[in-house]
Each structure stands twice: as C-alpha cells, then as structure tokens.
Image (cartoon, rainbow, N blue to C red; front, side):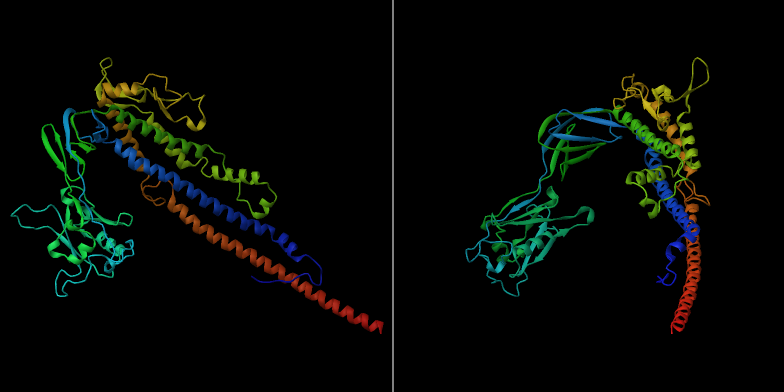
Length: 530
C-alpha cells in the first residue's frame, strides 16, 4: 500500500476530498461486491434446495415405484422376553411354533492368580522375569522357547487329526503384562468378513489374566497348545489348569422352529424371511406373521410429509419479498444502523434471494399438477362403462381450504384421520380402511403417482448446456457468472485506484506549487525586512 502524506502546505483534508471525488466509482466497486456476495448466497440456497429434491427423488419417490415397497410384513411373538423378531417382505403369513433350546456364548479363559517373586503386587508394568514360575530355563535351541501358540476352533474328536488354525505369539522375559496383553489382542485368523481374534485384559485387583474370543459359538473356541508353547511363559501367566486356570467353551445357539433344529454361532437366526434373535431359553413360543397395513400407511404418510416439506420450502422461497433492491451493507452503512436494523436488512436479503424464481415456479407447478391428477386403475366403472380413475380424494387425502390456509401451505396434503394432524385427525380415516379392504388399489395408485413425479423430476434435472445432471437450477451458468463478477470487480477496483492516483498526483502538484510559493514569499519578506 502506498503511503501518502498530503495537506502539509495547503492545510486541506486531502483524504476526505479525494474520497468524495471518487465516491461514484467507489459505489460501483461496492455494488459489484454486493452483487457478487448475493450471487454466492443464491448459489448456496439453490444447492441446499437441490440436495433435498435429489434426496426425495432418489429415495422416497424411487422406492414407491416398486411392488416390493408395499409388501410389508409384521410378526408378533407370544414371548417377547425370549425372542425378538424382524420381518422382511418375503416372509410368509403363518403361525409357527418355536423353542429356544440353547443360547450362544463365547469361549472365555480365566487365568490363575499371578504372583511376583518379590511378593509385591503385580501390575501392568510388571515384567515376566519378575513373576513366579518364570525361570528362563527352557533350552535356547528349543523351538518352544519364548512362544505361546493359540489354536482356534473346536477340539478335534478322539482319533481325529488336529487341523485347527493357530497363531504363535513371541514373548520375552522383559515384556510387561501390558505388552503381553497387547500381543494377545493382536492375534487374528481368517479374512476381514470372518475374522476371529482375542480380547485380553489383566485385572491387577484380581491378579488374573482374562482372555475371550471375539466370535461367539463353537467356531470362536480357542486354547493354548501346551505341547508347542514355552512352559515358562504359560506357567508364570497362570494359563494352565495346574495354576488354577478355568476355561468356558464357546457354544452355538440352538432353536427349534416347527420341529426343525437350527444352530447359529450367534443368537441370531435368519430363516425364511424372519430374523429371530434369541434372548433366553423358552418353550412353546408362537410366532404369527401377517400383512403390516400400518407399515404401508406409515410409508404413504412419510411420502406426503416429505412432499409437503419440500413444496412448502419452495413456496416460501418463491413467495418471499424480492431482494433486488437490498444491497449488502458496507461497514460505513452499518455504522449508522442499529443491530436490529442490520439483522432485519440481512434477513430480507437472505429470504428474498429466490423470490419469483422461474425455475422454482415451474417445478412447483409440475409437482402440484401430478398430485392433483387422477390415474387409471385398469378397472371399468360399472355405472358409466368408462375406465375407473382414482385420485387422492378416494383415500381421504386433500389440501386444506384455500382461503383459510397460509399462502405457503396451500399446496400441502393432509390425510383424514391422521392422529398427528391437528387439521384432519377427527375425520374418518379412509386411507387405513382402503389399505385393509383393497391394498392392490392403494399400491397401484401410489406406484403411478410416484412414477409420474419421478419421471417429471428426472426430466427437469437432465444435464443441459446450462446445468449439470441431477440439478434443477443452471449451476453451470451461475459458476460462469462467478468468474464474470471477479473480472468486473478487478476492473472497477483498477478504475478506482487509477482515479485516486490521479487526484493524489494533482493535489501533490498543488502542494508542491504552494511550497514553492511559500518559500519565495519567505525570501521576499526577508529582503524587505533587511
């Protein structure tokens, strides 16, 4: 930044004068900055709205187009304390008999008490060399020296070949119990999808090492292979029965469903569309699977709720007061306003960025027209002989009175009898009745209305020369405008700087002339005085 010292000879406030002389150009710079900022804010508004539309399009609308979304089942259990049930659409309506015969558990090893040679308390920082039982006496050429071998899987039966996978852990006498615990925790076999490992912990208060499998059931069983491990190590750590170690074997869960036994290494079973989670042993449990009419109702209710929120937000943006006449406040303008005035001004800009936006107006019209439509259900009206068409009215779904509804809520739909809707909760619930009486009609209608809107929004979000795919607004064009504002701002700032330089140069010349004149006057006064 150039430092300018002015007004020394003339006594003029040059800075203020030049500020006033360049005010028009300075205002042009502020205007470009304001337009640039409002453009950025407008882009952010559009990005947020577009994200919500795309989510509605990809999830809710897309799912409603398919029969599978309307195939909902529910299963009740006569003993919820013993089992919990999750039901998929492929489950068959039926009543089934179930018993929980055995729950799964993980293999668990409780080590014997660990003591130190000195008699002091054994902590996580105690080394193996300090423990009773560790002598380091194993021959250096013994393959077992410094090694603990962990085998995974159920013990083989008598006479069977032991093919269990194993992991060798290298442990030194200088390792602390914390080091040993960490080495046990690093033990793993299998791939990422079927990995088995160990959880380990040393409890200093109990003086014992605890090991458990990360996988429940028989598959998660583990044991220490004493024949291929360093006795010095497993004895000092209390990991064999002679030192008080106790082991609980991992067991699979067992259930009997309709007379057939099933096993699982966890307490969860997936059988013919049911996910059964066993929680306690029990007999004579009845599972009853039936159509879930409430699930279909909730899905439709969720669709309308999301539509209402989306169309309501569009209406609020579209119907707002236009913000064109409001520029972003400069610091100078803020200095002359109260905080409330500044807040109100900024809110007017924020709220009115997309007022009367043509794209929003078009999208709202298209969506509303589809929701107001009637769709051919493939049936013939017996009275008229014409194709039978169904609209929202057939299901007791309607908008509220136009004149008694806020402008931004006029396009929103309400379900008669919806207990969560203060406007229509007292009305007869035709939708629930129709789902029970004629589920095919409900399914066909909502498949058609969702497919129609899905297709229309897809067309509106196609890629063009001005917009990217899955985008309602002209994002490409708006990005180009960002670059234009940057160029325009540089040009206006350059003009302002050039104008300021010109005026400062003119005032500098004036100051120079006045300095020279003052010097001559002083010299002349000196001559006259002499």
